Length: 136
Length: 130
Image 1 (cartoon, rainbow over the protein chains, first blue to last red):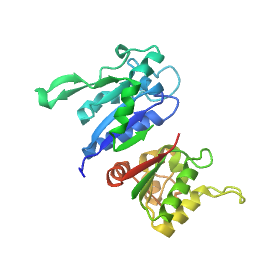
Image 2 (cartoon, one colour; image 1 turned 45 degrees about the vertical axis):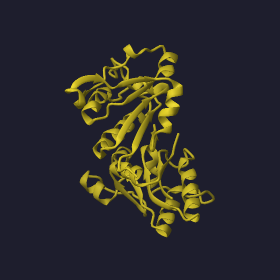
Image 3 (tube, chains in turn orange, brown; image 1 turned 180 degrees about the vertical axis):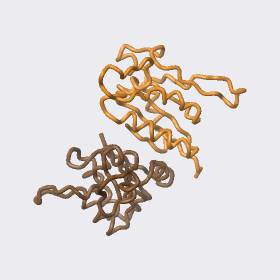
Image 4 (cartoon, rainbow over the protein chains, first blue to last red; image 1 turned 135 degrees about the horizontal axis):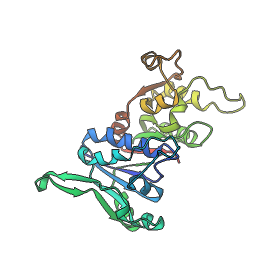
């Protein structure tokens, strides 16, 4: 068996209101040090986690941690799957999401988008190929 | 089979810890190995020794410790999640200037790397939560 496993982090909840999104991101950042094959999936209200122009300064008291997602590319976490239907059901398009990028070392460090739109049917295939799925 | 378990919800409020306990007990009964039980999110609240539920109810926190003692289970509370929720061992309490600790017997506090390692080492990582 290979030493590298495929990890998928499934983010299903809105970024604020519960702590799941923030603590999920903490697992991803720590996990990045283990050199595994990491993917993230944003589905259901989880798509709001990477919406651009987040502003928590209107009284909720929650820490705005959205900029942390922009650092994922530097941690070699560059497969961010977003479920198309979840965006559509919430009146969002990919243009409403933050620009999350990475530098491709196999392509002269060209800056590329980490965001990969997938359909609900493709999510099924994505999950089936994983070794470890952590759902938040 | 080598199994690892993750528990993401607190005791009594949610069934996750109960279901995980039944799962682990049954797996041990069948001769499987439990590599680690990792508590995250409000799941770290399973690790307090200061709970005293009514005597005619199960004691979710203490029975994990009893199972751990019997089978040598590794019960790990995530340190970052535990700090947010006020679960501390002696070292954590003194490092952070707290006047008491509250960790239950059989548990230890460590980092998220223990969860990733469990995912790598175990044949299956089974998650209990919402």
